[in-house]
Length: 92
Image 1 (cartoon, one colour):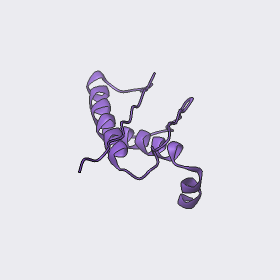
Image 2 (cartoon, one colour; image 1 turned 60 degrees about the vertical axis):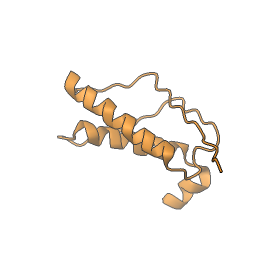
Image 3 (cartoon, rainbow, N blue to C red; image 1 turned 120 degrees about the vertical axis):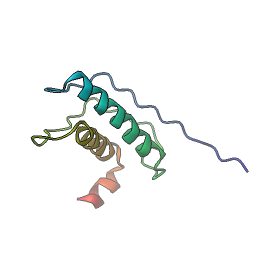
Image 4 (cartoon, rainbow, N blue to C red; image 1 turned 120 degrees about the horizontal axis):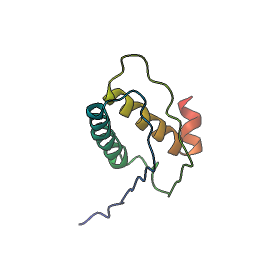
């Protein structure tokens, strides 16, 4: 029996990374891709309907945060922004 697969497409128009070197930007993007892929494959139903976010402020990183920390923060903010309203209520 074959299972239908849902395709998830994240389109990110612009990311602003202040204070990141080119090497750190590469690490951030690699980690962000992996984190968003994991989010998309989680299968929790939060991505069952198309969603569009006009913009997303991922906030401020703590001093000394790594590119991977930054990617995890962005992914957490995306997850919170796309969660169904009832899911957001239960997480507070």
